[in-house]
Length: 300
Image 1: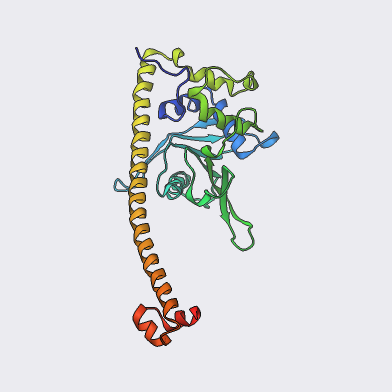
Image 2 (image 1 turned 45 degrees about the vertical axis):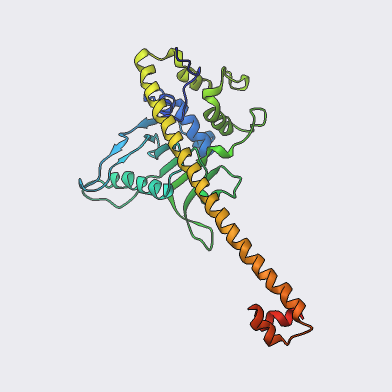
């Protein structure tokens, strides 16, 4: 008999869409987006509506875009929400490419003055981006900016990356609602109950949606299949990563030995030159040892 966790894994495609992709009840996704954008009061998103997550290009030869979640709020702001499970080369380029689809979708036929409603790409990443590896911040919000004045040049294109692994806190150390969201994403499949702090909070409803035993049998089977795909993906990535480390260590060791031999030979030449300084002239010592005249002069 297979034993599964009490709550489904939100990093699977099924788990993520089960929690945040309910078109009939969008309050969990609204809560997460409001926390990421730090929206409060009158600026807070009240309602979002899902749009078609598969956008087609103008010609069959071009690539299409399939988003995890694609929605619009009551003000017309558009959101692409992507969960990225493992590190992907050129992820930021792919994210920017994705934003071109809703931009083109706004290009209505006929007269159009190129006015665009704001677009937000939100990447929930289960890895850290190389360019931010020295930063302790896990949330990065970028716009088109003047690199000299640091002023915003264009406000309607927003690239947001949330590096989930950078949040390394116990639940006692969490300081705001977004950190609680990230903690739940990190630990949901390992938890056995709702933390006391979340009782009565909107996040508690994520636990209700994610409880495995409450899923219909057909949904449980679908999750099992999806979980296997996720585990295979993680295993493949870790295997490739470990193979790369082993290869790097082997090459590094070989290079280190070669460098060590070279350094040893160089040091031997220097010691020989020191012993010859009192009996031979500098030019002759240079010929005998292979050292430069300048280096021998420095020794003297």
